Length: 442
Image (cartoon, rainbow, N blue to C red):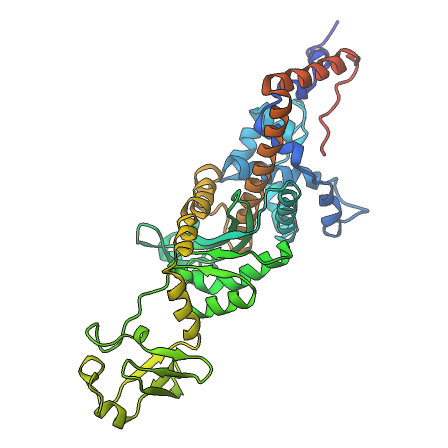
């Protein structure tokens, strides 16, 4: 007489593979086609003991779970594992059959501590390489910006000795309010919004300070400089202009309006011509202002006219109320002057108009579909992992969409699906019911 367990085994044996239940055009199938995670085992080998201890969960399965979390925007690992328990596509994606016990949610948290962020940085690098191989990176016009991410922390515990997240800091969010959080600094390609660079800091760090270091990382990946880097006004400075020019890159960022410390009714610094070779200014009255000193606190350079020149000048009433005019500028004032001049050109305006749809579209996608708006875990390192995972998934999505569009263009979407499903049915009809193959990981 057959027991209940015998019936369950027979029923499982008669079921077709889990593979056949997942539609061929399912987004996880598309993602799976462009993933190559064979490097994971070697990358984490040193983090596991090879000759004793309990059998570990396959690290590729752990990585797939993290990718699934980023793809679906599921903030908590407990909820992620509850969803995997009942979702056939999720089980297929991580390579688990219906009757297999899933890893405990704590496995993911422990693995994150074990792996660190190096593994996820390599995964991100590989997503960029895949985009490059697929022709998705044009590399001519790049866009840079930053977005704030709410920390998993109460405001009254920020910066305290007992804070559960010692790395989070107050930052200003889009609604103007100060909240504890982090900031993701991002560079994306203007052609297909491929994410090329990601840096994560606490929320109080200004965007301007991270631009050059992040740009150097992107230049290393691209192997050639882009023509343009577009950013909002936060990135407009003489230093950024000069540094990017030295790298062969044009900065497109609206510069601040020139003002004078003596008020708007007097000549602004913009009306003083700067001579880079002689390191001096020439005033509207055609007199020179020579360099005299540098401020110790702000580092501004001070240029000053002679008393005699100012005393005898017919334009003094429009220039200064003091005995002689001073001009205080940054060490990269020459670059700022050139940036202001460039900002008046039509090409500058056209390039800047392309900024918002590109980089702000990247952030909107990350927050709306992949849960970037709030930290999943605490600490700068884990916040960086979250940002890298989301950027990785977004890049692979672009490759998957390209591959699917090419397949549909060649055969037509319905024909492509029917052909592939037909192959699966033929293979299944030739197999015996004595065993049910487990979906293989890549």
